[in-house]
Length: 149
Image (cartoon, rainbow, N blue to C red; front, top):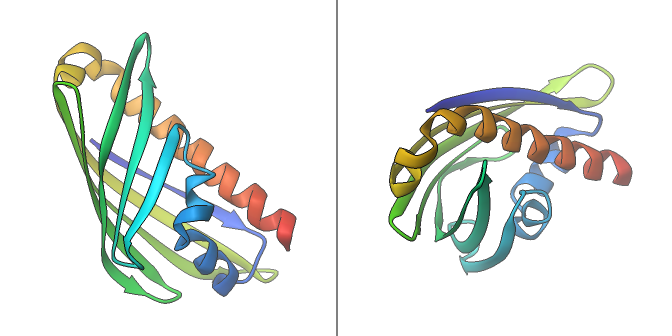
């Protein structure tokens, strides 16, 4: 499943970059995050996320690997997680550019593949729910960064 979107944040690009590459900051914005642990700074993280798709709930444990970091322009990461009888893999990328009035435009994409029990039970809900969760994440990021600015 392919997801994409963009958000304009009223803050300089360096500030947005620093926020979006800090796992502790991100962890407070991702819906359902229970734990994030740093395995190798700016390279590898491990975490636990609970996701609800309709009446089906799943708790994924997994790793996030940072594939590319081009400060303060672009980041690409790969995530792999497992839940009982299911697995999820994602490649996500974000690019940042200057926007008017000292703002930053963040454009993002995510290619997500869910397999196993969860995929067969709730396949038709995955795209709309995933897009909604991504929107919730970026709105929370925007709110927190702009509050600090």
